[in-house]
Amino acid sequence: MQPDIQRIQLTEISLYHDLRKAALILRALDHPLRQSIVHFVAKNPNVTVTNLVENLHVQQSIVSQHLAILRRAKIVYSFKNSKFVHYYVDSKRINGIQALVSNLLHEAR
Image 1: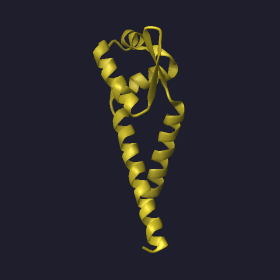
Image 2 (image 1 turned 90 degrees about the vertical axis):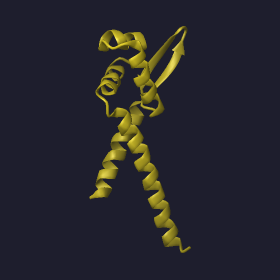
Image 3 (image 1 turned 45 degrees about the horizontal axis):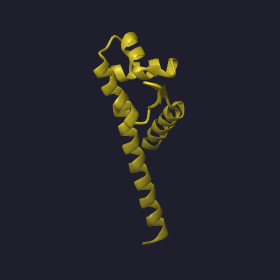
Image 4 (image 1 turned 180 degrees about the vertical axis):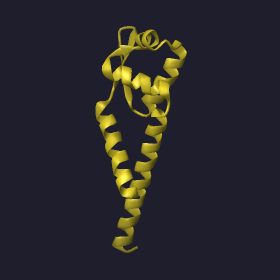
């Protein structure tokens, strides 16, 4: 293969992976409750599921299911402290999501 063709294919592969990553993240954020969870955790770092249940008025099992989706997308992280699991938003990841979407929109024009 010629170097220019290889470079184009690598660029297309990179763009494809960026699109897949963006789609995973955007699907994770495309739910009103998950958006509320991210917003609440961002404003109140180190919250527990109990805090979320009390403040969002949602059952514990539902909150846990949505947190699992957000963790898989690496939007929120957790750490265990004693018997409680605490959550925080990865602000660098959120900024990266914004930059990625902005770049994808710019390239689509």
